[in-house]
Amino acid sequence: MRNLVKSFGTLILVAWLVLFVGFATAGGKEEEPAPAEEALKVVTIRVWTIGPDNPALGRKTAFDEAGKRLNKDLEAEGSNIRVNVEAEFNSVNWSSFKQRNLLALQTGDPEQIADIIMTGHEMIGPYSVAGYIVPLDDYIARYPEVYNDIFPALWATGEFKAKIWGIPRDSEGRLIWIRRDVLKKIGWTESEIDGLRERAFAGDFTRDDLSDLAKDIKDAGVVETTMIHRPTPGVDWLGLIWNYGGRLSDETTGKLVVTKSACLKALEYLDKLVNQLGVVPSSMTNWSWPDINGSFLEGRAALYLTGGVWQWLGWQKDPWNFTEEWLFENITWIPYAAAKKGGKPLSVSHPLTCMLTSVSQNKDLAFRLLTYQYAPDLQAESVLASGHLAIGQSILEYPAYKENRYRSEVTRLLDVTRISPNHIKAPFLWEAWMDAIKAVETGAMNPSGALDFFVARMQQELGNEVIVEE
Image (cartoon, rainbow, N blue to C red):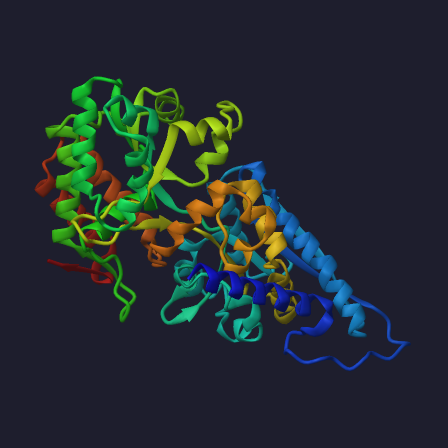
């Protein structure tokens, strides 16, 4: 399989070389040379991107470089068209970025709206319903050598009501971090620790095994806090519902789904961790992010239930400044463990997505620019700098990515990743589910009561747009 992937990646790289020597056009055919006397026409393509962290600046600079390559090809084709790329990078915060985008989109004024918007894929539902963006199926079909390269699981980020509205960008994955040094303290051998990941991927190490491990660590008294997790809403928490066989959306109707049995099992599992085993603090949802990261990195906590792949790079920078050598020596990871023996593990990914606005006056050219920034070298350098993962097979063969041990290993999560629904109310789902989790962990409600609370909130907010099933 690895040889097949490697061969496929090599073919894709060759296809990209063909694309960027001037062979590709928006329609896939060579254009007739423009008359010599025809004046150059410069078309401005505006792009909105976001970090907000500075290491993600590659999301902007990839478009800058793509514009240069596109202009070179346009010249070689004899076209009198050139592009002027105005790519903006938002380094403030997600909330202000989304608010700014919405206010601009509501004007319907092409002068105030970018041609391309890179944002969270949860915006596809509301943007498409409002008519702010256009479906991309026909555009994508023009460049099969580029878009067939993207990992199949990631296309779910752009799908809504049987059409593709966005193209994934900067993939990532959620996982469980484990302190290797703590496992050694309770008697695990190096080979047992090294084999744990394979056991998890094979469905041999389950959620119950994880809770048993947490109890062993707690009983040994080798850390202050056995297990920690994120304190806020996020797609991470949807993994528990999928773990126990639940659905989140209905493919036929596009509605959100609450599978009561799966949600109850998920809440019961968290209740077990917090209130029965005492391996997760009941105040966990009130912890600050610095306290969470510090507790784990400084060895005061052993298990990190809701980690993200990007943290590995972040832990090597201020304020932590751990070396990668130290991280490999002291920390390992596994996917979200299966709920039962022989079951499937999973990860959850929340990639960004690139959308084409309906008011763009130059959709064909804008999409061609968008396609050029998916060149393997531009994508690889961008995700390596920001701590994210490859979105396509060819990036795996890019030398800097291929030689990066951590990135090569953790990209495997994309084989088992799941994507949050692109429903307009998906962010509300995240919030309501987190409120139910918090109610259980703080002891405000038992799992059954928290489930009823969650279902009632979903029905009240969504009405007939949510399906509640047993």
